[in-house]
Image (cartoon, rainbow, N blue to C red; front, side):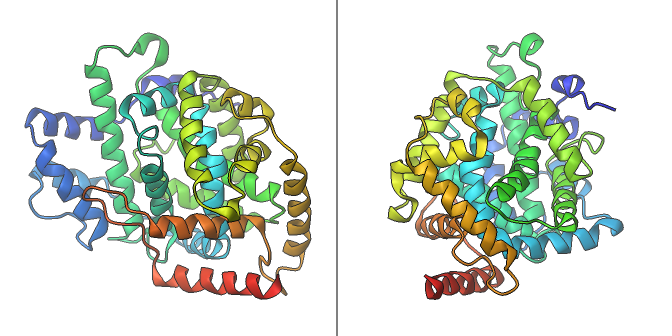
Amino acid sequence: MIFDPRPWIEVGDAPADRVVARVIADQAIAAVDPLLLRMIHTADVVPEGLPSYLQDFLVEELHLPLPEEVDDVQRAERFYGEHGLAITMLLGFASLPWTYTLRDGAAILVRTGQLTRHAERRVLETCQFVVDAFAPGGMEAGGAGLRDAQKVRLMHATIRSYTLQGGQWDVASRGVPVCQADLLATLCSFTHVVLDGLARMGVNVQPDDAQAWVTAWRVLGRNLGLDPRLMPRTPAEAQSHAEAVHALRAGPSPEGAQLATALSSFLESLGPELLTEHIVPTQIRFFLGDVLGDWLNLPAANASIHVIHAINRVDALLHRVEDVVPLAGSIGSGVGHALVTSLLAAERGGTRPPFSLPPSLQRAWKEERELRKRLK
């Protein structure tokens, strides 16, 4: 059966929408927000001081892995431990720009200033969410990944509420803001787009690892407020769902181009290891293709595309002997390390804590970095 995302354009997230509507009616946003931040960055699953109805929501809507999903979640954690640096690079160079081609989602991001004014902060928070989710225990009871997902879910509901209240959003033609179809697209940016990006880099992802990655994102998807009937169950479904929702919701837009410009400027600021502006737009085009690159108004690919193709051919060879030389010299690992290093040095401002890595990932990625240096 061909997947049809059209019915899901009119569906929001009723449980989260109800609780956010009540928070807004009680004029409790200013008091609730710092408590939710504490929920993410402490061991408190539900911090004291939240309204009782919000506490109930966080308890009732916490979705742990099902018994049949536990092994896949643990496998996905190991997969991320091995390929996390390359995946981090893909978040910036593939996943996020892919979502900017979704016209209505891009329009909402621009309206709320989510990335045009604070590109570094939002990239950092996206990377932190993935780190928290796939660090060991991130999807267990009290895990940071599930807490992050619940906070993102409430943020989406808040954006949906204020966008509708503004009176300038045409639901008849655009659907509900941050609808289920758009949430699915975001999920696909973390599943299919990441797996496709790894393949383009020459990483031979084992089928069981790809399946585990998709299963783990189903767990996160439930906590992000996606209807389980909507989410892909296999890597093949992740691809078909991504293609279907992208065909329906994507296209060129001034907002998408604006977001891509802000993201590129941030990535170009990370340092010489990224080759700055000589490679950033070309690297994004390498992952997304020229059609999407044109939609985002990215500069045309330059001569560095030949370097990228050559490096990825070398990467493919290295990954074939990864049991001997794991991920040695990979451009994805190198750029991912530069991105992580920059994020660790960054401040998000306000009350947001800085980017952090759990000790297990710090050790694994430090060892990989040291191996790369010895083999240069």
